[in-house]
Image (tube, rainbow, N blue to C red; front, side):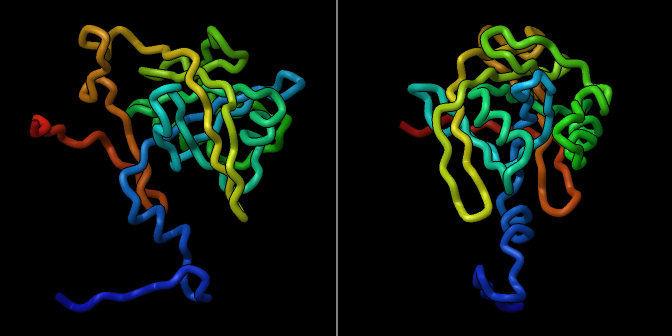
Length: 195
């Protein structure tokens, strides 16, 4: 082994963002849709995304900086999260571009939205699954805000279900890695949990 480099956040030559996004991988993508107070849609991918609670069902994603997504959620208290699969990688990437708040990213990127059932924002119509959420809470850090959303509805394409269970091989979700790298769905292996 050639040795180990120790880097400390805060040092001038340490880019914590680049290191975190290259080391905490693969990261699922929350393709978050919101609507502002005037009814203008916003759609943006966020790769700091996870489950936070089961009872109640809560997910969490992080907004790095104050972007339209975060402003809209604070104003309306609602959002949806669509799953990004192999077929929608380019569209998800296109919606990551910086647009003004008056621009609807879904319209600009040609992404068809389906209406939300419980919340006002829609979700990506072609996504194999989407979660409709209401704002539960936020936690502020110096340059980031963690958004916690209570899931109030699951919308899942019947084709990806086995009974009532979503099957990974049918969902085919992609993930984010470092820099401009995306990960395609990996091979699935199974291990029974020990008693």
